[in-house]
Length: 162
Image 1 (cartoon, rainbow, N blue to C red):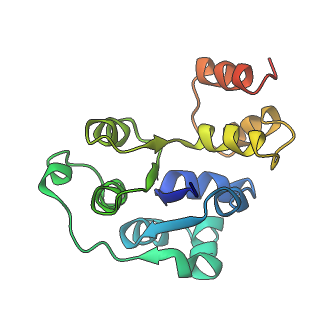
Image 2 (image 1 turned 30 degrees about the horizontal axis):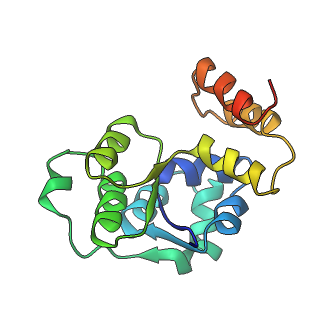
């Protein structure tokens, strides 16, 4: 079944910083950026690569979220996370792409499939879009993405790069 993803700000920002945004569009048959996510990114620096991408190529992926279910509101998350989760909740078949722990917990409680940035990289390697993830993990760290060392070693092990 083709992948349908709804993506939050963090994966967009960090993948744009390391010039790997293309992975999202190569891996997903359908990619949605909720308007709230676009709004959060637009508040960042003008030279932010994710902001620039959303003002050009990514603009066609932005969708308005019409309904925020009370079960999502109850989690009191940020605008982007709330809209990502609301989209997936209201549109079955979408997987949420986000890194925030509380938002991931909300997704799991709602039985929504969830994947983080590291998981996207692992999938990209399996699909042949990356030869290795180790250098990309290093780029993520250098770009300011906080990754626990146990997650890094686990990702390398899964990628058979340990």
